[in-house]
Image (cartoon, rainbow, N blue to C red; front, side, top):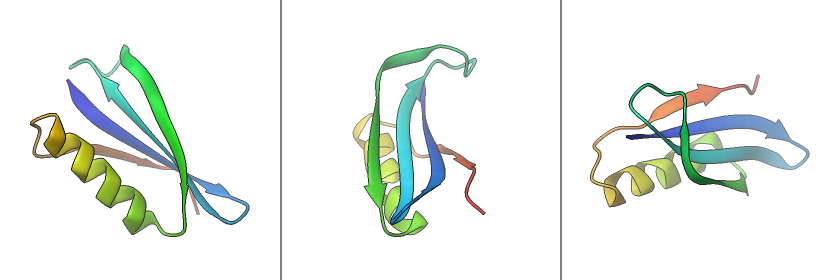
Amino acid sequence: MFVRLRIEEADDGFRATLSRRDDDSKAMMGDPETFLVKTKDEAKRRARALARELGHSTYRVIDKAK
């Protein structure tokens, strides 16, 4: 299992979606968490914290923002 962070542009910052995925990256495990942030770094900090909470040292980022 790993944590995936997807970043998209929003009206007043960025929309970040954190999801837990199986090792093949196909099946989502549980419900995703979506939140608004002012910076991409803030989203990455939350993804890093969730990954560590789950016992992982890394996470994957999909950046759809320009």
